[in-house]
Length: 126
Image (cartoon, rainbow, N blue to C red; front, side, top):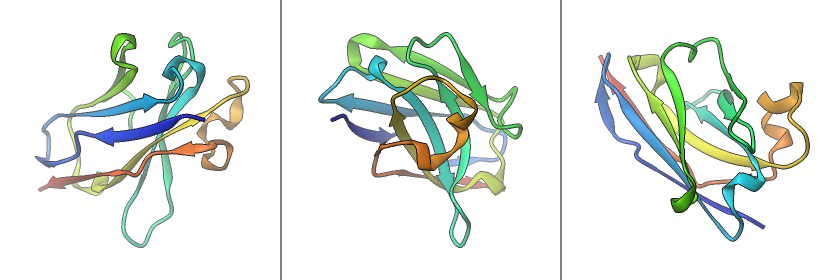
């Protein structure tokens, strides 16, 4: 069992930057592939980005490529998502999630993730 807590969500102006944190407890975060998802009011949860257990592989949604970047602090058992050039349409609750198994084409599917954090609100103003 792993427990996840997201933090770092806040109000940011369009074009600004924000770094989200996903901190794990109970297990080392490197035991899991970690995904980031977001959900805006009235919309379905959508995939944002994922990083493999080793950190060697990342996968970003098309909308995130070139703007979002992963980093890690293994001593703090934490994964970070740096988000640059934010857009108003990206206002949402952001969730981190963990899954085991092998890295695969399903890495962007929320149903494959067994563990979820509580979410952190990100608001991007125009």
